[in-house]
Image 1: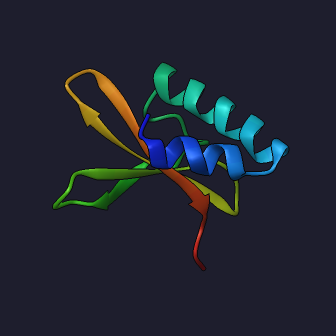
Image 2: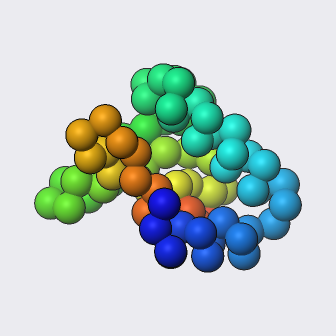
Amino acid sequence: MTECFCRSYHDAPPAIRRAIERRVALLVENLRHPLLREKQYDETRDIRQARVNRDWRFYFQIEDDTYVLIDVMPHPK
């Protein structure tokens, strides 16, 4: 986890924090889980995006067999 992710996580509402925890658990279990709707976000920096809920996304990188959580934020519409 990056400092940015930790800061954003702690600033998020409690219900969003619980949803983030559930989605990160799904990520660890199955990257392709349909609830995550995981996709490439920034190909040049190899950043991926996954869904927390309809309005929030989290961003991560895969380094070897480790997920590095970069940030979580409301999804810009």
